[in-house]
Length: 239
Figure 1 (spheres, rainbow, N blue to C red):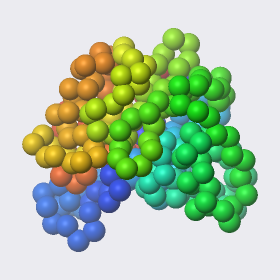
Figure 2 (cartoon, rainbow, N blue to C red; figure 1 turned 180 degrees about the horizontal axis):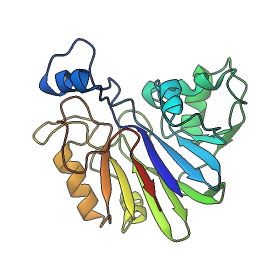
Figure 3 (tube, rainbow, N blue to C red; figure 1 turned 45 degrees about the vertical axis):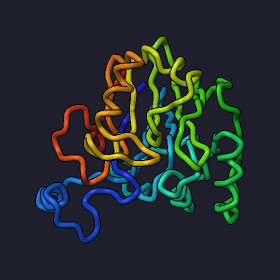
Figure 4 (cartoon, rainbow, N blue to C red; figure 1 turned 120 degrees about the vertical axis):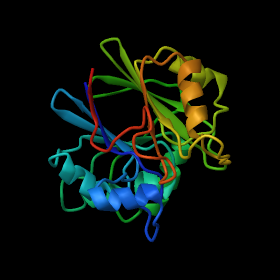
């Protein structure tokens, strides 16, 4: 099982348009970027895309244009599903998995695209390409939002790119002892964002659940380059 971070940025991305802060200036000078957050999982030659960001076309080209066999949506914010339209005239529209409220919301926006809808309730395991997946609710008000647990051959990888720190206890139980946690860290310590975690809160959550390793995702341009445990676009993990 191979996981690739296709993007690690927030809804705005880094560099931010029109911004001259130190992080954005360094990004422009070096060519670095944080595209909008999404994850590509490779399993036995097949590919699962977790969240289809507005940067999907660029992300798939960077990843050597894999054929995507399934898409998983965690919630209905535009930076997590709207890029699904980039599959049009590129490949057959892959089936989409999402909790029922998320599926209903995304499908209304994508009504012009024919695709197979596979709604799955939270806490109910389902199989994609031999990977056992489970949606777990998090807290990203006011939008109903889930994270995703992916398990194969005893390896457990969890993804929750948009959430506050007060995650339901039943969801925290699923996260305990994961091998890798991809976790929301939109801003540096000291910032208070109503529906996200800052970096200190993300680090604390990873410690509280006993994650063996973790990477921060959904980071804004406020998070400096070189921050420990900050995920990088196109960073790959083999499990």
